[in-house]
Image (cartoon, rainbow, N blue to C red; front, side):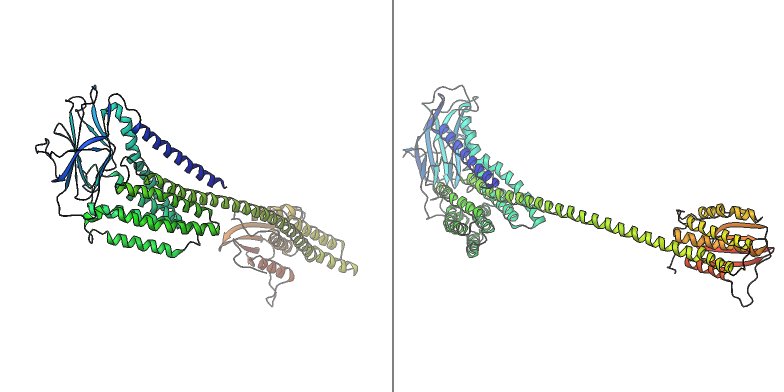
Length: 638
C-alpha cells in the first residue's frame, strides 16, 4: 500500500469515526435523560384542514379553531399525494401541547424543535400570542434549521400554558414535524447547538473550504490544462450550489423560487456526471457511452424541470423524483466502473467506485427523508458522505503531485549525473584542447623565431660568411655585420616581451637597445615621443615587424646619411599613429627608375604585413622617414 493511499485510508476512517461519534452524541442528547427543567414532548393534539395562508399572520390568534382534535405521537408525518391541486388553498395543520407538567423554571423558557419540513411555513403561538413566524421562501424554507423560539421573553414575560404550532403547507404536499423540547435555554442549548452544527454548520464550513480548494484547482487547470483539476473545481462548485438547499430558508431567497429549485435539482444530477467523468480519468478502459448516457439524462432533467416549461409547484412537490432517478442510474454506472477497474487493475478507480457504491445508501436515506418515509429527527447525510468524494479527489491530486515531484527529483538526479559526466568530459576535452593549443602555440612561436632568425640574423651571417671566405670583408665591415646581427637577435628577444599594445613601450625598448650604437657612431638623439593611443592588435609578431622597420631606418641613417642628429617623434593622424625618423644628413636620393633598394622594400613589405604604411621625404637639411600604423586592424593582411 502506497504511503499516499494509506493516508487517504486512515483519513477516511477518521471521518467515519468522527461521524459515528457525532451521531452517537446526537442520540445521547436527544434520547438521553433530560434535565429536571426540560420537557420532551412526544405527543400532541392535532387538527388540520383547508384554510391555511402563506401571508403574514396577526399578532394574536383571533379565529375559532376546529374542535375535532385528536392525539398523535411525535414525530408526526402527514402523507403527500401526487394529485397536486395547484389552485387549491393551502392546508393548515395545528399541533397543540400543554405545559402543565413543566416544573418551575428560573426564566429563559424556550421551544426547541429539531426539524419541521413541508412546502409551506410555520408559526408558533403561546397562549394565542404569536411568538414566531417563518419568513423564508414557501418552497425552500428553513426545513434544515432547528427551531429555537423564546417563550417568555427571556424570563421577562409570563410563561405560556398552551403552546400551538401552525403549519401552512401546499395542498397534498405532505409534511412532517419532530418531537418538541421545552425548557430552560441553558439546558437545551447544547442540544440545539450540536444539531445546528450538524445540520447547517458543517455544510457552511465545508462550502467555504471547498470553494477555496475549487478556486485553487481552477487556477492550476488554467496553467496546466489537466482534466482532473477542472473536474475537481467543477465538483466543488456544484457541491456548493447543491448544499444551498440545506442552508437557505431563514430569510427570503435572493432569486426566484422556481429557478432555485431548478438549480438545486440539476446541480445534484450534475455531481453524479462529474464524479463519473472523474472516475473515467482513473480507469481509462471505462465505457464512455455510459458517461454520454448520464450526460443525456442530465440534459433531459434540466429541460424537463425548467420553470419555463413545468409548473413550479409541480417541480417543488416532485423534487424527490429526479434524485431517485439519478440514484438509480448512478448505481449501475458505478458498478460498471468498479468492474472495469477490477479487470484492469486500476486501484484508484476501484476505490472511487467503492466510494460511489457506499454513497448509494446515503442517497436512499436522504431521498426517504425528503419523501417523509423516515424519522424527521434524522440528519441529512449527503453533506458528510460527500467528504469521502472530496477526499478521493484530493488524494488523487496529492498522489499525482507527489508523483510529479518524485519524477522531477528523479529527472533532476539523472540530469545532475549527466551534467557531472558532461562536465568531466568537457574538462578532459578542455585539458586536451589546451595542451594541443599550447603545443601548437609553441610550435608556431618556434617556427616564427626560426623564420625571423633565418630571415634576419641568419641571412646576414651567411652573406658575411660568403664575403669573408672570398677575402672581400675587412675587419671593420666584419664588426659591423656582427653588430647588426647582435642587434637583430636582441630585437627578436625583445619582441617576445609583452608590450600590452603600448607602442611607446616598444619604442623605449628600441631606444635602450640602440643607444650604445648611436653613441658610438657620434649620432645625437632627439627623443620627442608624445603619448599616442594603444594599438590593440600589437602582438609579438607585429611588434617584431615594427622594431625591424625602425631598426632598418636607423641603420640606413647610420650607414648612408652622414648625419649628426636623429630626431624620433610620434603623433596621431588619419585614424592611426605614426613614428618619425628625421636626420640632418645628405638627404634621400631615389633610384632613377623609381625603384627602391632591398632594405627599403623589406621595410615596405613588413609595414604592409601589419596594415601600416612607410614613406620617405627629403626635407631641408635631411631626410624624414614616416611609419604609419592603424589604431585597429580592419582587414586581414598577409
